[in-house]
Length: 198
Image (cartoon, rainbow, N blue to C red; front, top):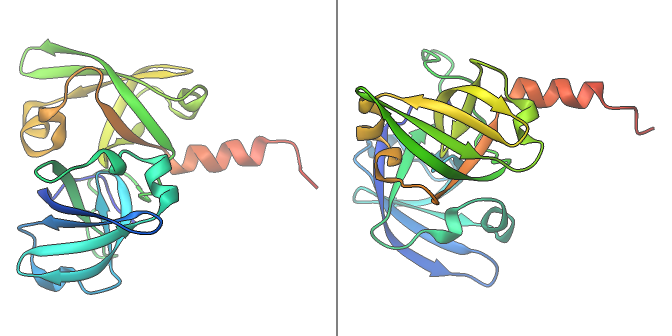
């Protein structure tokens, strides 16, 4: 479980193909003791399992399913990625409950400056916007953001300059893809309201 508060901008150092999927190595400034083998780390919004850590670099394997559902397959050496370690029960929940289980990808439609902030408009998968609410939470590339102007397949978020500086949003442009995780509570409510499948 994560909170959507980005802790580091990692640098992809290596992408190696596997029989199904790939293995990535990412450099980080986060402490080694927080990356034991088998631990979870949120990489660009996707929960990954650490399989190796050495000298400020950790490795994880991306399944073919994750490559299909996320933007991880588009990463190459030199790219920056948002990183967050899994939350501990005694931590403050600064963002919202983020699982790192990406629902799909979205696309930046536009970025408009509003004073020191920017408004990003995102195209979502059809119907995904139904799981957003005005002034609710959404995770985009693992970043906890507040959404507004919610539509069936679109959402706006206001991003302060600090967030642009410490996350990959500051490197993005219209047309770029992002990983989308809608609010966990909304997904459960939708499921409970569906007709019984029994």
